[in-house]
Length: 244
Image (cartoon, rainbow, N blue to C red; front, side, top):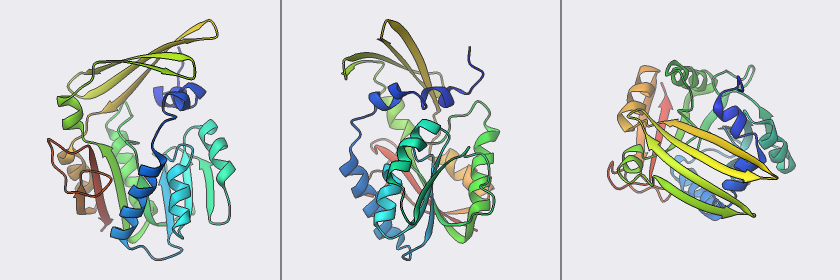
């Protein structure tokens, strides 16, 4: 049994990227464009893409004239992201619970449900405090999370997917605090079983967490087109906050 936290193992496998390979890049680019129109950041603003994966959002942020650092815990993801590195777009391996020494940012983006992975709820506080520390005065924080209320109400408990010749069997469970996704598949004569676990954090949880750590909520949206948030019907929970 690995002593690593579940996300450190699963996110660093090639199978993770196979399962999620069909993410909509066009939709992601449109989302970033909508966000930046709303935020009106100055050109060359310093931006941190926190938990950047292979860097697709980082690349788009950089295309809009921002100076971007993308960081992720997965060395394999960062190795892939490095292929896109250029002037004002850099990448590094980093644990989001820790402050990046010697760096400060005008905005921090935490996108695509890259929060709430930890066993200890105090780690949520550590993440928010590290983000607060790294932001310049009046700096902007963007958190894009699933709308847990809608996910729980419409939970798809079983799903089968065939991708690149690999058959994935997926089972989802809600235990009152976390949403679990059990992923089973076989490849090259071996059986694999990974479990994703995300805290089912809701709007009120984020509001409390941010307020207690000196953030002011500016706006909350419910989808990538930046329509207003509705607890029942929205696909996403997108929170824009400012460092106090």
